[in-house]
Length: 82
Image 1 (cartoon, helix red, strand yellow):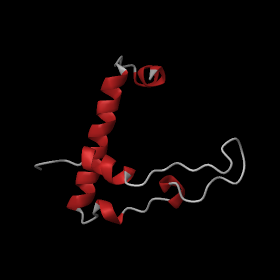
Image 2: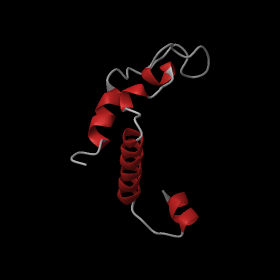
Image 3: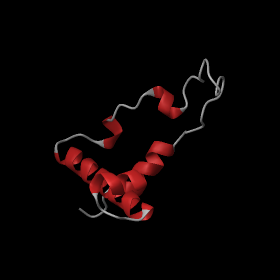
Image 4: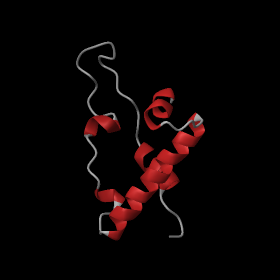
């Protein structure tokens, strides 16, 4: 997070930067909903969901078990009561 402090000239703790990121994401989701774009309509590349394992490199043959992760994240950051 040092690079964020350097780039912005604002000294913040990592937790503060993470909270700012969560707030930005909440606003993006709220904006999209106001314009008729629901979170279930977002396109996410299949590799993000742990689709086909990598064909080469140090993680060859591995995939990340991400089933349900996006829903959990969206449920956590979705604006409630707005």
